Image: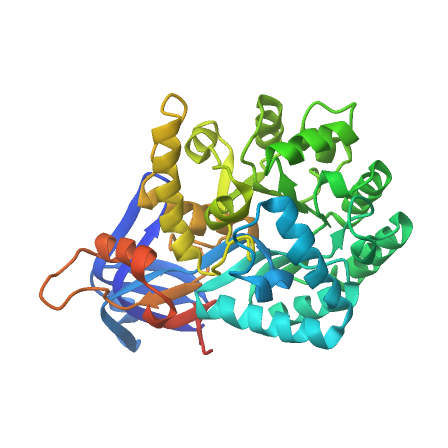
Length: 420
């Protein structure tokens, strides 16, 4: 048995209401799994060497539940556009270049390395319609030891000719992708219809059949704009909500169903999300950059909908999930200010919980330091000014608002320290 002990100020959020803080404590890791947190080392571990981090923070690594790896090279570009213009002028032309595998490799290598640099070890990822390039992204995630869902995108209508598939080839290439990766453990395939307006009923039904055959989940965008929600129902007129399109196609029954943005959910959308234990992903930077709306996060959480955080590169301009934690709090204040009867400001603890334990749950026992959870962790420097001591909770908050990758001093996956 491999036993390791780390000393520091240990923090994790066991719920949206509780930040567990253990200052000057020891976390014992057995075979990559948390055995316990102690104020002093238990007698049975007295001969185990201790890695001491002093007053540095030890926190769970982050999960990004909505990110477009193929848009990594676009980050911070076209941010003065709204969604439709941004897609047509920047995103679709750029994504078409992933037919060139050398281009795809350059982008995906940089993307994966930057995620690790910023402490994101678990991600739910959109690629493009190009299977070979998506295979490469999948292999890079596996090689680095990360956890993830990777989806080959499907879209057979309402897209430029250079990025639109025919229905049958789209389904056939998706089947090959699923066959290739169905035995994977830490990285798993997921179905990725881009969003309802770009997918025909035949394509949706075909993906539903693949979901059943391969016991596979779905990752897409849901009611991310007023235009999208209206267009979805115009194209699927016998459906009552955007979420019902995926439900009736059989895409929400065989794996995690993960929906990005969910800014304008109706009562029927909310009912379906709760019924299927789906995850709604709040993408704060993208919200302010190109989508122009704010998820009613607090209201949805209070109603029992699972919430996670996403960077949404490149609708979002930064890959760091800790910055999205801070932005989620900021946007909740705006939401409450302008819509006070139906929303409330969230705490930093709640946002941290959504980005760690709740998001990590789709990958297994990840995102917390409760007993039995994987020690996928980050060590953060003290974040203090030399003349003023801060509590561990205050230092975590400061990191989320003002920190960057230089403040991450060590990274662990399954108890093993990894290097950049």
